Length: 337
Image 1 (spheres, one colour):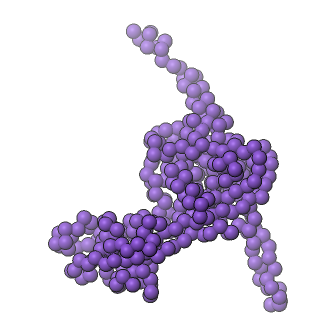
Image 2: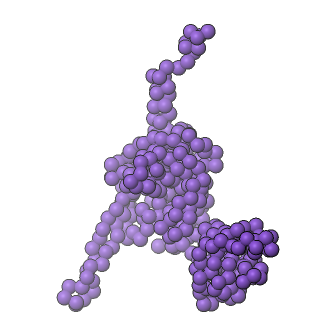
C-alpha cells in the first residue's frame, strides 16, 4: 500500500514545476498590459537677486500601471501621478506615449490616466472577494526602473485597512508577501489565471514581506467613477474629533449599540454640522442609522449617497441623547486637469 501511495504522490520536482508553470502562465497573461510610468513635476526655484519671477526646474519619478480597457485607460496609484506636470507611458513592446491625467482618488491611492495607442492589451480585473488566504499571487511592475519584474508570493491576509496619505483608511486591503519595491507602485497583483486582483500600493519598511494592494473590486468601482466624472464625491460634515470611551451608565441608560464615540473638538463655522446644531463636546454615536465608534467609521459612511441628503446624526450632549438632522456637503477629490 505504501508503494502505491508513493507511486501516486507527485515528487518535489513535479510540485515545483507546477508552481513555476503557474507563475509563468500568469505573468505571460498579464505582462502585455503592464506599463512603466514616468512623471515630471515642476519645481519653483527661489528668485535670483530678488528680481523677476522664480525660475522653474523639474523633478522626476516613476512607477507602474496597467491597461484595463482596450481604448487606453490605465490604472495606477494616486501617489505615482499626483501633481505631475507631464506623464509618459512606456508599453512592454517599447512604444512610448504621452498620457492624459483623467482623475484620482487620493483616499484610496488610485488614479486613472489615458494614452491613445493601437493594439493595446487590456488586463482582466478579477473578483477580489473570491480571494483566499494562502492563495498564490504574482506582482508585476518596474521597481527602480527595471523594466518588467515578476515576484511571487501568497495572500498573507485579507480585509486589512491601510491609512492613505490623506489620513483616511483604505478598506479591504490585500496583504501579500510578494516582494514590492519602489517603482512597483501601481502595478497589478494577479492570481494564477493572470487576473488582476489588486493594485500594488505600499510596503512596510524595514519589515520583510509586508506588502499591500488595493483590492480589485475597490479599483473597479473607483476607476468607473473617475472615468465618468474625473473625481470622487464624498460627504463632508466640517468637524474635528477624537475617539473616546462612553461611560457605561450612559451606554446602558440609552441602550447604545456602541461603547465608544467621537468627541467633537471643533465645528467649522457655517459647515453642515454647525448648521445642524452640533456643538463642541458633543459625542457622536450614530450616523445614517448606523452606529459610529470612531472617525474612521464616520468617514466610511460619508459616501456620495449622503451628499445633500438630510441624515440623522445621533449624539450625546451631557447625559442627553439627541438626534440632529445634518445635510452633508460635497468633499471632492482632485478633478481631471
